[in-house]
Image (tube, rainbow, N blue to C red; front, side, top):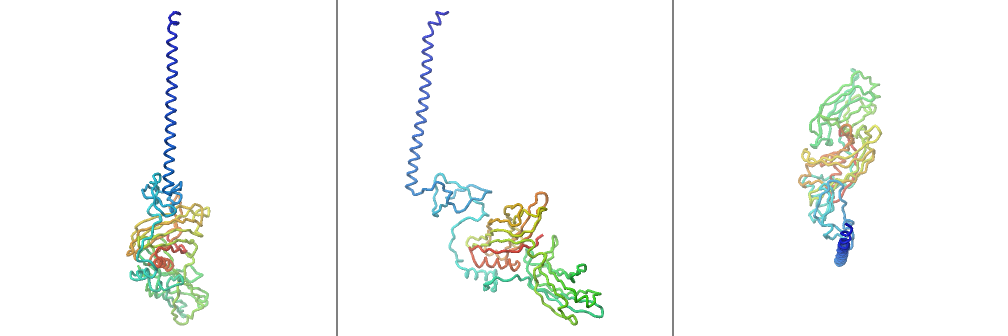
Length: 416
């Protein structure tokens, strides 16, 4: 047995030696392939660098000079060429695809030449379409809030010890409904007594209502009447929600000659319960006639009413685009948590044809986000050609200055 192993040992040694050199050869071949691949990559990189320098593009990141930052949500792919800092269009092989903002976001675009190159041409167009009044076109100083006025008479009947109040009519009331009208009625009190409340009938869809209704406050001695203040509040009736205050009048009776019938005209002033207590909002409007777009930028809110137990709110802004009282599109801003002075700086673009501006309204509502129950309404406003005077002035300024953002503060009104 020992002799057999002795005879086979030289062959086994040769086999082991052959396997050793075979493995060394494989390792050398792999190393050679790796070295060749590195050499080819470096050569390709050198050629590409020369091509870039020759073409004149030296920036490393093509997204570094983009004018518009992509929106963080709802991104989609696009094959549009990238916009560089020097406003030249190019399409490098590594930047062919990029993220693009949704359509409702404001994007940078070249302004096409059109007929609306100055405010005078736009103003004449607005006049022809009935969008602007001549008074608004000629005004150079912002108008004060005009809520209309009310006509009424006062007389005291000494024999019956009765104060007679006759509500005749109101004129030039602002629109509070989506339809561009209001459903006004009048509530009457003799302050400081708030127990006796008298109301007129509701006049449907009328901005110049006529009531001709007489109200009697009986068993009021003349000396007591002289200490009272006649409070008249005009409200817009809403069947499904809270009535919206339009304006009010406070007339001290000691300043009126009640021995005979006295006819009075009084301008309405904002109601104390709804003026400024809900907060205010700063927003910008911009009209682009060539592209049939209206851009609304929600900038920020200030001194919002607290809706949470903590004394704060979680506000966001909701915008409804309506046409002829029909809801077309709804958009919302992001939610700002635990603040009464949120800053948004968010823009929304709406496609609105020029001939449809006359019947277009934007309902802007500031909401408080609530995780456990229904979201609360903080306040809002309506922008359009038939809205309240302050909102209508902002709308007219937008039409007079096409392609120019016009910013204005608005006091939030009760929209609940």
